[in-house]
Every structure is written in C-alpha cells, then in structure tokens.
Length: 439
Image (cartoon, rainbow, N blue to C red; front, side, top):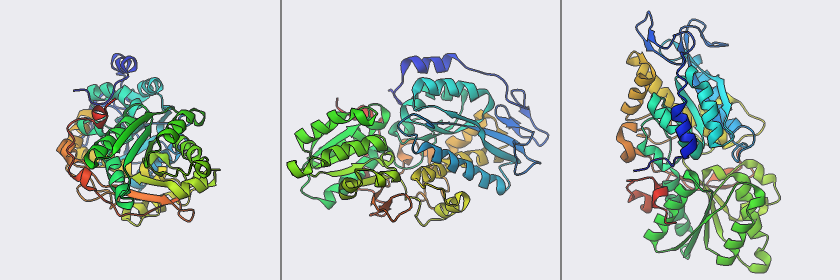
C-alpha cells in the first residue's frame, strides 16, 4: 500500500544521491571514550557558540519554507521557536553529554519537493536527524531516503500517512481527524447544516483534510463536494465561483493563510447581493494574525473558525509558559512559534532515550524513537501523546476550535476545550485518509 504520496522523479533522486560523507569529528562512526556509539552528525567538539563548552555536539537539520512558499509567513517563527527550544535544552545541561545545534544546517525548501531533495542532500552528511521538514509533499520527496538512512524527522505538517512511517515523529491530530472534529463542532453549533464543501490544495495536505471531511459527511448524511485549488491569491477566483454556485452550508478550507483569506473575502464580498454567508472552518495552517489587519478582517471575524491540534500561544500549560519565557515577546506573535516548540518534544525524547541506551547513531536514535510509548509535551498535548510504538492506533485525536479575536496574541482564541467528536472517536485509521478521498 502506498503511504506518503511520492513525487516519482524527486523521490528516485533522493534514493540515488546518497551523500554518505562522514560527519564532522567522528569520521563516519565509532565509540567515544565514554562508550557512546556515534556515526553521523555527532561530534566530540562543542557546538558553535556552545552553552556547555565541555559537551560534544549533536547537529540537527531544518528544512523550512523561509522565503517564497505559501507558508513563508509562518515558517520563520517555527524555526525561531525550535532554536529557543533547543537552547533551553542546552541550558538544562544538554542530552547525554552533548549540546544540540539546530542553527548550522537550516535550509530553505521553498515548499517545493525538488528543492527539498537538493537541500536535504546538501546537509545530510552532517546531521543526525531532522528537527523540521516542512510540508507534506516536500517531506514525501525525501521519505525513501530518510527510511534508507534511519534518519528520524519531525514534520511541520499533519498528514495521516505519518502514522505508518516509523522515521516520522508527528505531533497532534492529523488533518483527517482534525477535519472530522471540525465538522462535528460545526454540526453541533448549526444543526441545520446539510452540505459541506472542502476547498483545498492538491497533495497530502489538502487531500488528507478533504478525505476526513468526506468521511464525516458520509457518516452524518451530509452532501459533500471536493474543490481543488492552487497556491496564490490570484488563483482563487475559480474556487470562489464554485462556492457561490453551489452555496454549501459549511466550507472547510485547507490552504495557506493568504489563499484562505482570498476565498473567504471573495465569497463574503457578494453577501449583500447573494444573501449567502456560509460558516467557514480553516485547517490549522490557514491562519496568520496579520489577516486581522487585512481588507477581509470583518468577513473573517464574522465567518471563520480555526481548527488546530493544540492551544494557541496564550494557552496556560507548563509547555506554553516555558515557550513564552524562552521566546520573550516577538514583534509579531504567530502560532508558528507554538507549532515549532511542540514539534521539538518527540525528537528530544528520542535523543534522550538513545543516549540512555548509549547509542547516538542514526540506527540507535531510530530504534529509540520506535520504542517510545509516550512523550512529555509539558501539557501542550494530552497524556499518552507520542505513542510511536503504537503505530496508527497510538494517534492523538484531540482538536481545539478557535475564533478570531483581536485581543489575543495570535489573533485567535479557543472556543472549545480539546475535544474528540463522535465521528473521530469511532474512526480507525487503516490507510492514509487521502487514499479514501473519492476523486
């Protein structure tokens, strides 16, 4: 069975170009004087600007959408949060006699599969694992090589396919389950909802959410339409036209923030003449607080809800408080920071377990990750989250629904606690949800 959707050409290139050069300081492997097994991305020399100059260094890579892709408004914050997370780890002594460096091997993947393959191969010889790989399709392009090389990775994405991939350490409910919970919430808030339209990017991200929406619609006896749309604000007129033609009661939007705003703005600009005002729920990555200063802010405040796997920046958990203390008050606060912080916990847990086992090789870290039955997210996710040993049955299913609020730090405020609706509660993941989407 196919797991992550593969981009054939770039995926093949990722396997062919192995880049098996030795890492700095360890010459491709060995055992330290302290008895720690190492191979790639671990040195006895301290990290650059080391917090603990007597420690060695573990190098982690970051592949993120830093300049031109649809998630470039969020990605820099994700990276900064991960830097702050690992600085805190280093300030607490590091892991197994090593500090962790996530700054040296940061690369811009531009949310593009081919670019992701290229920058991944560039840093691969020098890293132990990936602290971040942003995007479902870009991650799919390097997946075969990650598996062949025993390189674990924290995805900046929530594809349901990750439940079937041992090298991927996902956090939070996947897009599929998140959307089921969103629809149960919507049906509870507006029992007269009879029709749903999923407007989404193609690929693992959009199709996964659409698969969950279709499943929920079938279970609830609602009509369902899937509309694929591309990136770019200027490319949303077709989606807007189809929405206005079919007039669904509920829109589930799975795009980037700018595209979501263009779609909602386009629909609500016609509201006075059409009388049509649908409820809108955007998948977690559709929001950015700067939208509250945009021309469509009024429409978003009237219609938009955001679904998400955890609470936003202002939430009161030990992990959120630690994050805010570590980051201070950025000039523009987005939940990219929150996501980057949360995504770092399972990599930390895997490294700690591997260090306890005396094996910081890639294979050792991979084995440690596979053995995890829970991860301490400091309250940002529920107890029992991070059960990678449990495979698909170990997946977290909780979702929080938020509403735009200009008085909150990231522009959204929860209107629910973490919840699992009856549709998701009764759902068993047996294949990636995008496989279930009826084309």
